Structures are given as C-alpha cells and as structure tokens.
Length: 319
Image 1 (cartoon, rainbow, N blue to C red):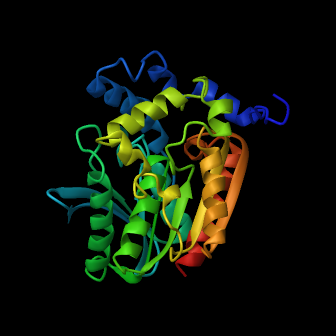
Image 2 (cartoon, helix red, strand yellow):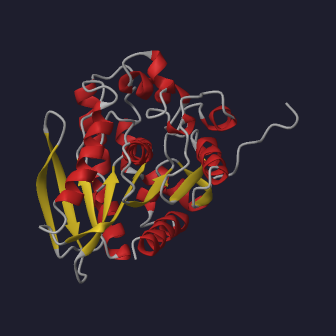
C-alpha cells in the first residue's frame, strides 16, 4: 500500500456541522431501498433549512421558460444593483435524482448579492423518470431562454455564466460543451463546485472516501449513474461524463473541489486537462471539507471562503 494517499483529517467546523446537520433525518434511510418519493421528501425536509436566512433580494420571481417538451420553472433572484444585470444560471445538485431550486435558494441568493448578478435557478427534470440527455437539454434551453429574454427581464444578454454543484456542476459543464459544439460562444464562464465529471469509480478519491461514512459513497454514485443514463455505454458519453470531452474552446472555468469527497480527483483531472487545452482555468481545493460543503457557509469558515471565492470569480468574469 506504500505510495497511496491516506485519508485527510476533517476540519473541526465541518465535523461539528455534520454532527448537527438536519440531514441526519435521512441517515436512517437507504436510498437504494427507500421508495424514491419518500427519499425525495426526506431530502427536501432535511435540506430546506439551509435555504433560510441570507441576503434579501430586491425581487424574486418564478418564471416558466420554454424547454424541450415542457415548460421549465425557474426562479430569478434579482439583487439590489443597477441594471441591466449580468446573469448566472445556477444548476442544483442531487445526483440528478433529488433536490430542487428551493433547497438551493440560500446559495443562489448569496451568489446574487455577492456578485451583483441575477441568479436564475431552473428546476430541471429529475431521473430516473427522465433519462440523459433530457435534463441537459433543458439546462441548455434555459440558458438560451435567459439570453433571449434578457432585455425584457432587465438582464445583459452579453454577460451570462453558468454553474452548479455536484450533478449541477456536471450539467453546467456539459451545457457549456453543448453550446460550444453548436457554435455558440456567448457564455462568459462556468463555475463548477465539486462536480460529477466522470464515471470512473476506481479513482483514488473513491477508494479513500467512498465507504459511506461521508454520505456520498461509491454505492450511492453508482445508484445516481444508473438513474441518469439509459444504458451503461452512455456513462462514457462526453456530455454525460464531460471529463472525457475535448475541452478546447470552452469559456473560463472555476473548479472547486472538496478534499474529503469521492469526486475530488475528477475536479483535479478536469482542471489539468482544461489547462492543457488552453482553457482559462482556476482550480481550488478546500481541505478538510466534504462534498456539499458550501451549504455550510453560515457555520464553516472554509465553506464561507469557498462561497466568497466563487462569487469574486463570478463578479470578475461578468464585469
């Protein structure tokens, strides 16, 4: 075993947050054994508390955006700032399987207030009811709809970025790739927080942190992937596992990784590959914290720093 990494110590504030978190309500539920509606309700109940508090918005409006085969509900968080505002389309995580725009509302408002940008959160279709590439196609459609309606909604159509965490980071990067492939180069950047970028469960971070004691386990990631794709071969499709895509021509990226996360090595690999492809790339590893750490910004200093760092990057690329 010599030469292999060892598990890193957990930040004390992160440990205290996990010990006190309302997510403990779901720890008695096995996601692979619990009926999906029950698991989704438990997740929503456990995480909606993270949406409380935070900065108020000048206006928060829910709109229906035109999508492929359905209307997409999207919340527009408009901060106190002079317009027209830059726009940041923020895609929530949850393994493509659960969570909503409401559980991520605090994070959306934090980015809006700190970056001086409208933050638009689309409620894309979840898996397994809707398989790849439905959610991706909806996210691309939402981005296009925001640009098309920008002037009507007080937004600047030339200052739009995309981002997300976990599965939302996957969808954000894949959407940027899909737009690039269609010859649309108007995105200003992509903010990618501890995203799912590949389907390789043999990476060292899976060995270190995939056992199940940190919630996001190898077993759970296999479950999420089985929900998302129709067939195993889709797990290597470059728009499902965007680390496998050609990255040249992408807009600037900010990639934030949590050290104690099965997905940590994917973020590093993406940063290295993007830089080699000539993409303007900022990479940050937040030590001692777990997957999903940004939702702990109110009580964990490294989470607050991660949120602030991302907002500062957004403000710069949307200037």
